[in-house]
Image 1: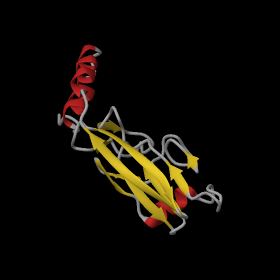
Image 2: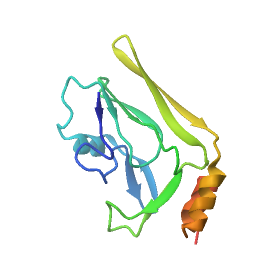
Image 3: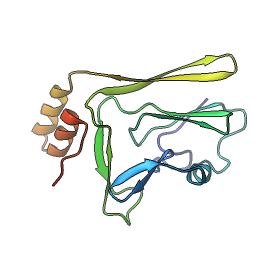
Image 4: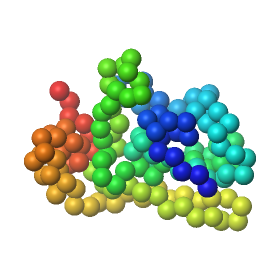
Length: 148
């Protein structure tokens, strides 16, 4: 098993998503291959990544399960990193639910269950309001970034 925040080569690079305009889409095979670029040893069969907050699994080359469990506390945000040539992009899950993954080994394979559960997101939204992060407060309440 291996863990990384963004991709194996950068904490601020998405592994499984690619910003396109103001949105992000599932990265294609070429993009994922480039981001892995020989950085995962052959004996690794599970790679957990994050950064995009988008819950997703990709079974890579049938030997490697890549998982992103999502985010427990921030279901949407906007950013210009690491793609400064686009004004910004949005990551949105469309729900304030907490998201996480349960992974277990079953024989030679890994199985992953992506979980989405409601929680008291309003208390965190109130805290974001108090700290002047109205965008995050909106994201915490709705799972979407505000449209300006």
